[in-house]
Image (cartoon, rainbow, N blue to C red; front, side):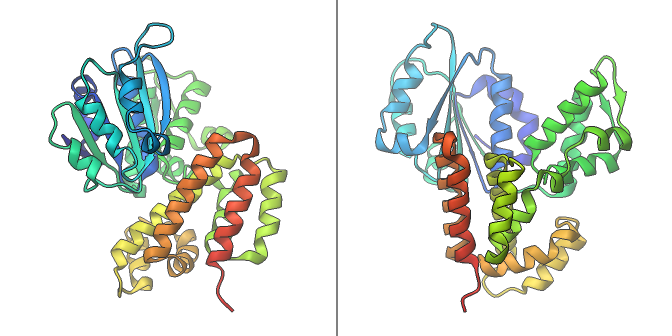
Length: 343
């Protein structure tokens, strides 16, 4: 069974009951992760969560099947979430499907994979599996998602406020969901007792992207502005900016560059394409200059290597949280040097 972000919401309830293996892919890692969390919330008995990495499954292809068919530590239900890159989990999924006995739900978030990957092809025609492809969203779609989240949380807000939340979350639906939940808690709102959200309330407790400090460092790194890098890394340390949050901002920008690159093509007009995207409100006007520089730095194989590098860094940060700040600084320095204009 296949789905996209446009129809996933409509079938999520049904597939959570009927499917046992879920493969979330596409360049929008935030959307894929949000979909994964949505399915978990819809499981009858999600039970214990077991996290696994694609690299571990690639080394041991029978591990997934063994874990999926073993009992929870406390004898209750469980589900498995796999973070993989590309087709790392292909052999493991194949072994899981061939195994005998009931298995717990397995949810795979596969960065750098698409619905044309071998794992997706293995699953897409099965009634007990779902392949869902997610593209980076635009401002309009995220704003619409914010309004849907708000309705469920008992918040009444207009289109302007929904758009402001979407921008503040850098079009990341996970961060937007967090902002909606924070507003709902602050206003003591519920579906039975809805509350209105005004600009004053949003400004009082809402997240501001620039205050979070992500984008100045993201832009310095991806634009190859090595002269600004040391000051930005020092600011990251002084403000205790969350390393994983910063890396997610890097990944979202890389996904945006990949989407732009696909629209431009090998010989397209970069300036005209960016201008068209801005007029269509898929690019915020403040990002126009930075995107124009960065898309010229990262094209083709260089962009593929950048995305692979970010995935590698994400794994390293999650497996070594004590040294996350140092690992991130080292990785960002390597990327900035690679992006710097050659003299």
